[in-house]
Length: 101
Image 1: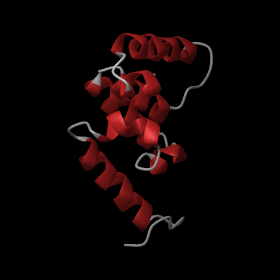
Image 2 (image 1 turned 135 degrees about the vertical axis):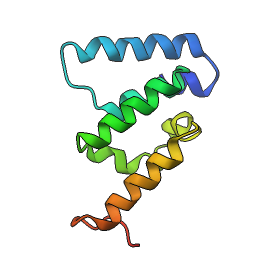
Image 3 (image 1 turned 60 degrees about the vertical axis):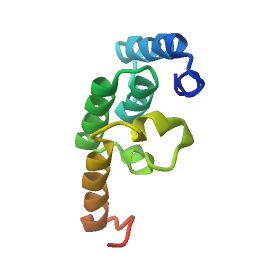
Image 4 (image 1 turned 90 degrees about the vertical axis):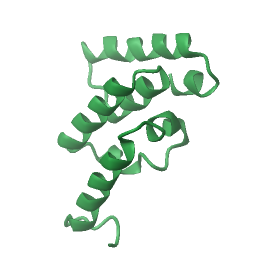
């Protein structure tokens, strides 16, 4: 979905996103992955909803959201920076100490 969205093929991005949603019915798909796919498919509200849920569920992959090139559409969303700031603050204050203040 992310690759299709990056080159402007929104219809294919939407198909791939739907495939991921269908897979959720039978297996676990990380919410941050769903967030990136939803953003690429043009569903910003769903993307942020998935991202929030991933954070709330403790999805460790969320902390790499600013580094994965395929999630550029997610990072471009209004509201993403606020979520990132929240995630970053939790990383700094957590015992795992991923980031320095």
